[in-house]
Length: 302
Image 1: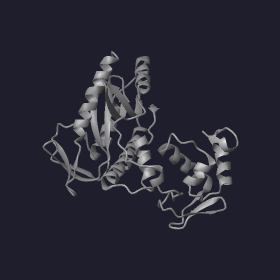
Image 2: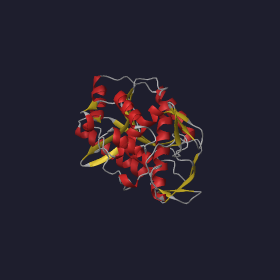
Image 3: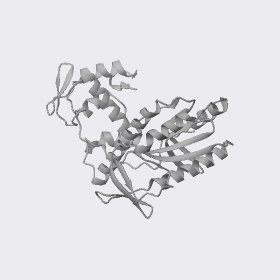
Image 4: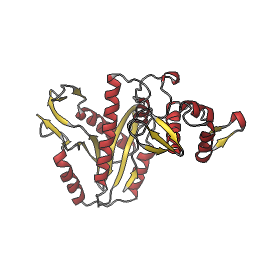
């Protein structure tokens, strides 16, 4: 049973919104691409978990803290006698381990060793369970679920589940009987209640309102080539069509996410969209989809 769904992290959303509107450095682009790939891999793994038949709780994207240390769990599966902590890695290509370091065969780039991150999360989670006076077997694994991932020189005793082993892992999980009781439910709800929404280790590019490109970009090709034709916005670069109402709502989401301290007003969104959509239409869309507060020039939306 799924108790906590997965959504894009604040970091991923911010990078996704900034990418078309400013020039990211190579390091920032690499960070953004990895965030997108990571989320894609997690969603694909979520689809596989839908086939689990035994009584289990599934909790996604937990950000927890113990002893002043934050740690993240991609997927937690609470079974009758064991808690599975799963770190999902959607790496593509050939990699090898050398001296406890992970390298890409193609580029030679070094990546963080997932075992180190996993062991840290496992240790902190065990401490959290002790604080909650809970006694469970904890089994932590790294799931590599991209079908085109290959790992060389990996010792057999590492807690890795490789692409060819993922289905077998889930089959074994399905074969293991699991019946949950009120105690399991209380623990699951407690863990969800301890989830933190802000990751203090998140580092975003420095950005300012004036430096970001204004306008509405195509949700398909990301080009700022949208022209309004009736109720539609049509991209002159790729031909993609979308309702103007949807593009304005998306622009509002971006504006509010990147500048949470700014009020959503007709004037602000009109400027953010670079006047591509008329103020009158923007006002109608805001009144239809958001709560109106104030009157006349003091009107804003929530």
